[in-house]
Amino acid sequence: MMTEEAKKRYKEKHDRYYSAIDHVEPDRVPISMSSEIYAVMQAGYTIKECIYDKTMMKAKEAAEKFMLTYDPDTQSGMCGYAGEGEIMELVSPKYMAWSGRPGYNVPDNSIQQFIEKPTLHDEDLDLFFDDNGTWRLNKCQPYLCDLYEPMKNFKIPFSSRTPTALAEELSKPEIKEMIQKCWKLNDMIQEAKKTRAQRMKELSELGFLSTFGGKACVPYDEWGDEYRGSLDCLTDLYENREYVERFIEADQEQMLAKIKSWNPDGSKDGKTVMMTLHRGMDGFLSDKDYRDIYWKHLQQIIEAIMAQNMIPSVFCEGNYATRLDLLRDIPDGRMIYSFEYTPLELTKKALGDKVTIVSGIRTADLMYCTKEQVIDSVKKCIDIGAPGGGYIFRTTSGIDFAKKENVEALFDTLHTYGKK
Image (cartoon, rainbow, N blue to C red; front, side, top):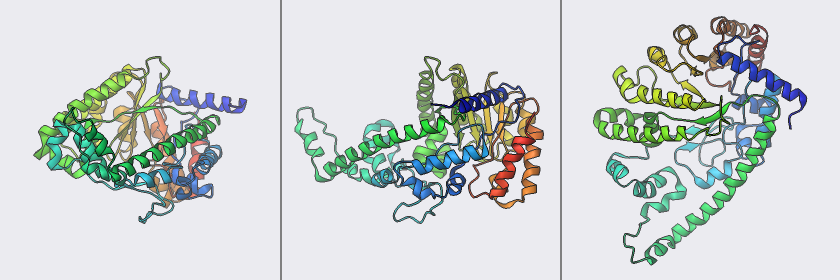
């Protein structure tokens, strides 16, 4: 349970955060910061240790120490994949490496490294659309993970008059071994879920705000992230456009239906729905393609989330300077756009009266700039973003290997200069 001190902290942070979202200048600029590697290292651990600590205590202690030391407004959470090392080794994904994974040279203090490998190949496009179940069993799962390699040759019996055929398939030695591993895997996953829920409960009792209410995805990003990879999903616009359009229309229908099922009892009112725009940045798509296969779907998703009385929180990766006018074309209401590299002065001018902007200094500044330069940069962000509300401070991508004196200077400036 929260102490009285934690309850007071939570109310202050809640009021500050939502005042900014409602374009009322809060008592100071809200701070939303991802701690990840920095928090773990400052707690005396490594990312590798946290990933292989099934109790998740090390990751929890790191997050707790960071929040209580620097006093951001939102929960920083535990580092990614905390406690899941043995689980991931059993799955043996082909698309990811992490600190401590045998056979991979990932440093002990590194976030997970994704290895982009398409799961949907050119020769399988027709099968994907015409017999998706077979594709997922025989193609997708073996492409994704070593655990499911035996599914390459798994045959689904066609005759309903030979019920023993399925038993024979399931009894092949390699399939039996895979199934037994799956049982073990599920037991491990369920135990990890319980542990994670307990650790997150402990963190929530500290009184820091958690606004997360779900995740959504633009269909074209899903096409690239889950199936085709960055190169193929781009060339598909010229060589396989009919497949792209067929996928995104079907996927959009499913996404909108999913969103409409959220929040039936109003318990998620005011919670944020996260979206990361991986392939919408300037230069990746032409203006026409962005409008036709990206923006119109993002726009519909934003409208659907807002209709559920939830808050779309969209992270615009890369530079988004040429897309700002389109980003305005949404209903009035609570809306958050986070920007990675688009200058704050541009986003504030183009969108500041319409949405809440999340932006700040670059992570690299905390690693390579002087303390004085960091202070000046933070003050500049506050001067530009804070007037009129609608601004939340966050660095571009966490703080990673930042100099401690720079992190201290950053938070001290936000807590003092950031006051109303």
